[in-house]
Length: 539
Image (cartoon, rainbow, N blue to C red; front, side, top):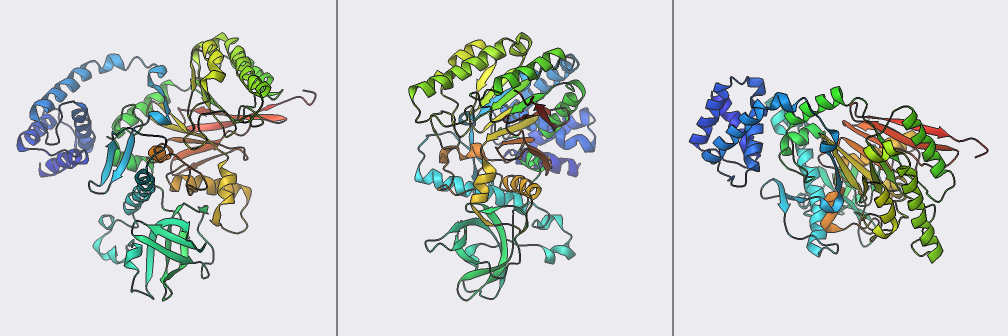
């Protein structure tokens, strides 16, 4: 009984709730009444705690009256479960999440968890928000690092704790020359142009002379790293090892913060995720998403290529649930173009709308998502980018009922899955700003390093603001924590697909050239497939 009480208290504490004796006794009675097995206890209590916190009159100290109401509601819902299970409409579980709609959650050092910011967000931001966004990244990485087996004392037997790795801060280096330290911080350059490591307490200059080779991944200006080295009399850290912070699997992060609705579309528990995953796998085996990138509408092969793909879909009754089209939608920038080029840009979207509308089975059932590229015309050029200007796509919207012009990046919530879509030439940008990378790196290694770095950094743009400007009030929209189910890095670099720490990452490639490339994604298998349309040489 004491063990059960401990589990109940622990679950509610995760939601920042305190249980009084009456509430605890009520929950124990519920568990006993329903004969809940020990292995199902935590997920069952978590369901009750989550539903309790959805109530408008829920208080931090659990109200027995609200708790009873929640329990009765769950019972009523359970009676109808067999009816509800018979119906599953994918459209009711499909959400396109634009960056500017996502709630802002920041890390609270005082509470040791995420805290929602309800003040109005602006595109200009403030000096405070710029500092907060960088510190947020550090604190989020740090709290997940400290939960890692190599850093968490609670996971080790007492006799092994002397081997525990301990993180220090830059302020702990002073007066301790000759000692070895492990630090977590951001790579940056000081006024003299020397590489240094910054954390929330200060900075220290790094000496790379004794480093044989860095760990795997890209180490860029603005990226967070773990460094081990010896503090010298000169006030520098003579590093012997440098590596990316370890990536935390989605399941672990969700087990801690599953009650937080990061996307603003409703949160689910791990138990609910498992149930949804099973249903998607069993009932939506034929559901597919198509991903296109560099869809140059001004190229003579693009629309005929799409027409062939649509013809094949209709002939084989293979209608995709969602088609994501990423820019650039033009082969050259028209930001400062003449009136004729601007009109042609709009006409190309009109032509695309006509093509889609001519396939009634696709236009009626498929959701189209358009993500702008670096050359497309949007209100802003910093991240996150707003959708393509409405004046260019109004006619397309009128012809295609399910057309959604999204931000860059944007997200898709499909049942329990979170799919992040980012259109940026990220590989070139990362390679231009590398501080260190392993020698003799091949193309396949570069792809793996890119994926590893982005996911380890828990951020789509792990670069200094002077390299890649971002809107500080919306930096959370670039965050990859908890890890998404799928990350689409639409890049003009070579296509690839890699699964890293349980996150499936792929680049659909460019829809340009003699062989037009795109990718299909199958939610039931959480896997993508590379597709190619070979064009005739005389086309």
